[in-house]
Image 1 (cartoon, one colour):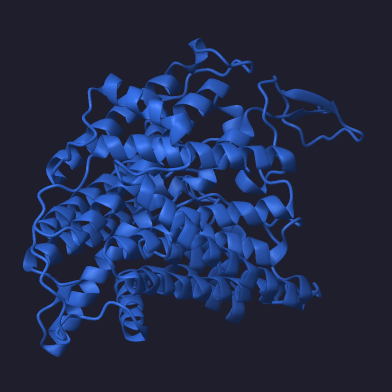
Image 2: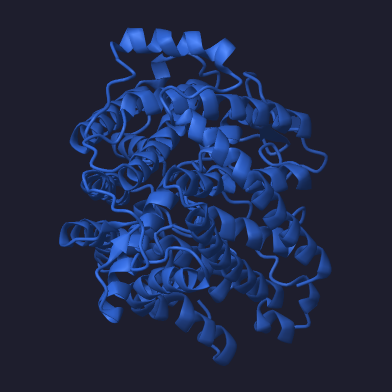
Length: 581
């Protein structure tokens, strides 16, 4: 833990803080059907054309049920669209490598993965998918699934802010405006920046490079004197994978590949892009509910949880493995297994914490190679519901569920009727909030338990003992939490793994969105009484502590037994025994 790491961490927090307000103000304009932006002269005619083609009246809003049905229908159609592309990629254009069709179970897993903003990849992109599949089948979802998450968060905020309302917005208007005015422009700028840093963007067939020293480690079907250099339209996918907290890499090595993340500057900006929109949404919350201190309180709670995760992970990886120290390996370098020497321990730990605090899943190091406690942090981040800034939209609406639960529990303890910004928290609100949390718990622990006692689940493990359990637990946590990162030791490309992981993604996305939207609709219909001294304070240090405590207690009490059998016991075996997994 050196000075350079502390400086970079402070710089990251400072830049993120400075960008939060301008991004939040821009989101207010974008998420208003009549809002005006500096892009209006160029994009307003396109917006009107899209409304005409879709037969939409942008001024007509939907209630929560209509909004949810529109969202589910659109997402399901998108899933079928991508499934068809993957199954038919051998007859579609832009396939210079001649890749064949993706198997049915892997196509289902991949389509479900990208439709849910998970971007879990049970395949190596550069040897499985054509350029057309990458650009049309996957990047399409990178944009629209990100917009869906932001739209749900906006609908919930409208429900909180509006008094005695029957509607929470129009899904189709939110979807169009978010893509036109936010995701597409920012992704274009960021893609050009990545190209300037050295990220490839072309449609060329893969190159063959002659090796200076021929290797016998090449696969038998390859020429041992040559190396295949994969390339393709990478920058365009890498830009939205970060901005939309998607995470799916063009290459199997993801953001540790020099063609996706070539420089320290590109690494820093990619990390910044992951939190950019989720951070701005907290300012959007404060402005919409006319209580900016509440928005900053939510931001502060997220920032504190984020810093705690970074410091624990950084400390664990900086200390390294004591068994290697005993063999005379210099401990000053920390645990460099599975890490890019271009980035080192700190940037790997920071990236791991950011990508799992958000539901991004992009990685610049292999979490499977982290120390037990270092690897536990990304796992625990996901199991908290990825509400620490979180995915675009999903982080905010997940945290607002915890806000409702925190207010309800505190009201019970102090004998005060729980109310959120003047609106009473009733049994219906608590039930749907608890349902959203329980869905994640049952999916993660249920599928993990099934896989850990099934032949198909154990067959894919690369490690035995507690580390093997961590690999299974991470897989279903990542899928249910719509994160997409993985402990690299697990082979998930089998029939049952593809099916169960795909179902976990769908459960974690859409079965959670339904109660969230029900909460939005119920809060919207309530009257908003004038503030009084009896109103529950939703800003200040006490509220931040209560909110953090609620998030940690729910996460700790639910998943601590599983963590104790996985990374925690592995840590004690590493430091106090002769057993090694």
